Amino acid sequence: MSNKSLMVSANMDINSKDIINICRKTEEKNFNGIWFGETTLRDATALCTIASLFTEKIQIGTSIVNVYTRSPGQLAMMGCTINEISGGRFTLGIGVSTPAIVTGWHGINYENPLNRIEEVLKLLKLYFKGEKFEYKGKFFIIKNARLRLKTIPRIAVAALNLKMIRIATRYADRIILNLYPVKLVKEAIKIIEEESAKIGKERPIVSVMLYTYLLGKEDDDYDTIKELIAFYGSSEAYSNLFKRAGFVEEAKGMLNAWKIGNKEQAKKSVSINMIKELIAFENEKDLKGKMKLYYENGIDDVFIAPSPFGKVLQNIDKILSLF
Figure (cartoon, one colour):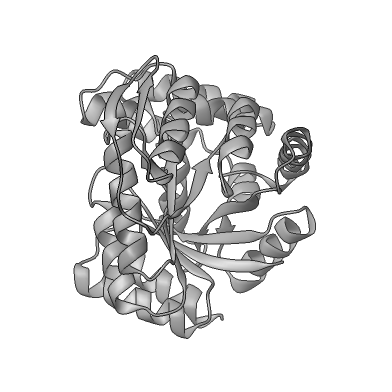
């Protein structure tokens, strides 16, 4: 299987009419799905609802909403509602986000992310059974809960480190890898297959988010991509991923720059090699070449993710014109 989807960041500086047009074009171009991320600007679930109303066939999902700012019950209701509206096309994609978002933007304590997401996944499974239940865990105590909606969404989990990949394998229908270089994919696939066999479960679909910017190689274009990578470089989890990929000095430089609030220094820490390995940049050849490599290494579905920075609409138009 070698599917392709479009992953639209809710942080893009575009309006609701743009979203409707993007959804329609994505379906016209025979993409398998359209997914919406969420950080600090728009609500991804609202955008998924728009996509449900203005498309007919393609899959729709969140990639991702975090498990801190919505309760498990709210996530369950939201997932079932959008799945109902979309006619069964919705996947609830969840993850742990970062301290900068959860604590910095929402004022919620960012603690025990692995334990929290596993507990949320357990609760989602209970809600989706449609039966009354009670639950007592580390984070949540649930009494007399029952979700009566009959249409159940699929579940996706965003995973970076190997422990999260194992958790995702146990509970999810799909695993989403973000900014994952090709050279680390086989390791992730091996863990997913081993864990699936261990518990007697069909291997989840494995997707990778491939950030893409195809408008040239001028200084402004490089600056756009450096800003994107540096944004993720503020997170310990992504910093560790970059180190595993061999970008040790870059990871240290970005993290140290963010600790003193120096965004420009964080961008300067992004190397050309990082861009070459992590981003589809400049032209169609690079995008399709990286997609081919991901497929060859076991990825089922590439989420082409237009950069949320730079010339957003022009970049999306360019990407869609290639298919």
